[in-house]
Amino acid sequence: MLEKEVQVPDQINDSAQIQLQRDQLQLQRDQLQMQRDQFQQQLQIQRDQLQLQRDQFQQQLQLQRDQFQQQLQIQRDQQSNSQSQNREMIQVISSFHETIRDERDQHRDELNVLHARIERLNQQILIPLIENPRLIRPITSQNDMNGH
Image 1 (tube, one colour):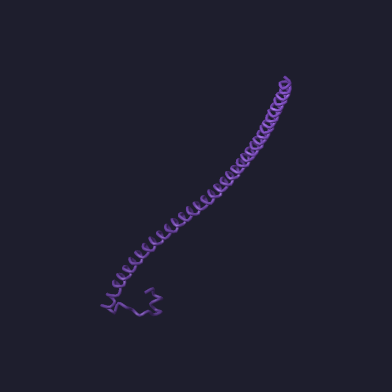
Image 2 (spheres, one colour):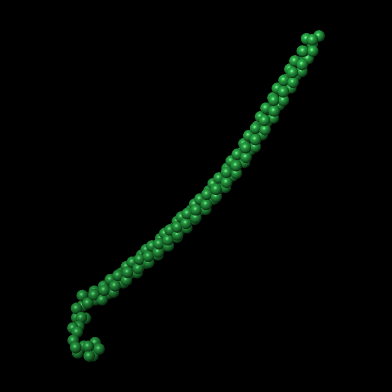
């Protein structure tokens, strides 16, 4: 029986050690769980910070895009206005050129008519004088006084 009594404390001692090991394992689990929770919290904080940085970057990028688009639109408008002004100037110059050409042609026609008329008048005057030279009177101061 003595052996049984001795064994009981060993069993109790073994149970206590097992319980102690269980408690230590539970403590380690709790510590690991706490470390895991802390790590996840830190990870979430980093994710939130990264998301905030990403959002800020996207806002800056969008702002830069908008500014670039505005500048580009201003340049396009200026270029378009310049092109429109150039087209208008070309139209005005073309219109002036056409008007000048028409007037030149009209004056040329009028000059041709006048030349033809002068030629006819010259023929009307010169042919009778050539045929009858006596019609030509010498100009004298006496003719001037008489009004001839």
